[in-house]
Image (cartoon, rainbow, N blue to C red; front, top):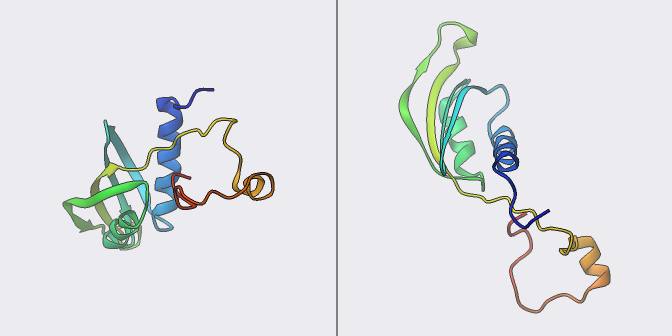
Length: 121
């Protein structure tokens, strides 16, 4: 187990972040990753809501609609969308040497300086 994770592990982490970020009942029909860029083609009740959800996610930066949404006659009138963004968050495996926050509070003194809690988790 090294400090860096494999590409497959990172892809799984970004898929999970995407699933958490997107509104319920959003369907991703095609997902393309090219380096640090991602292109998401799908359908949602509201394409603008899907875009807004990615804007507040820590895993993606600069999301934008790459094409105008189109309303489908079927599927309850869902809107199709194409969103492009950058993959911003890097999911690093802290390795066995990094204690959890719970263990740190009881086993290590708190650091007076350093990063704020929640960074990189």
